[in-house]
Image (cartoon, rainbow, N blue to C red; front, side):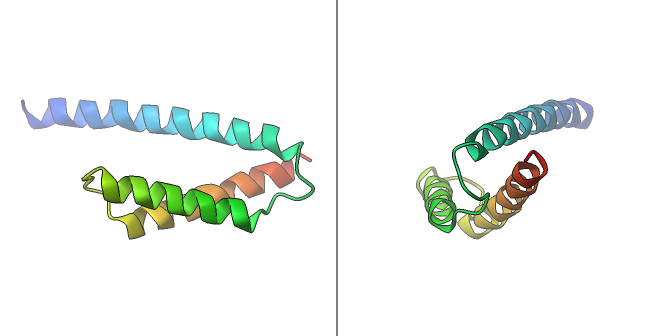
Length: 86
């Protein structure tokens, strides 16, 4: 394996990540129809707990603190999109 092949693999993974994030945002827009407001602190805490537990239990290279920070950004973007879709 050489560096160019590794970089191609990273590019493919980035495409998959962005596709999945877009799908997640589409779901967030759909769920907004069932909520009075975009913010749901209880749900956010459940998501944070779930993803950090997954990161901790799967012997992942991802630090649970990083995962929580990442999901905070994802959730903030979800709320922005939900509010914009109203």
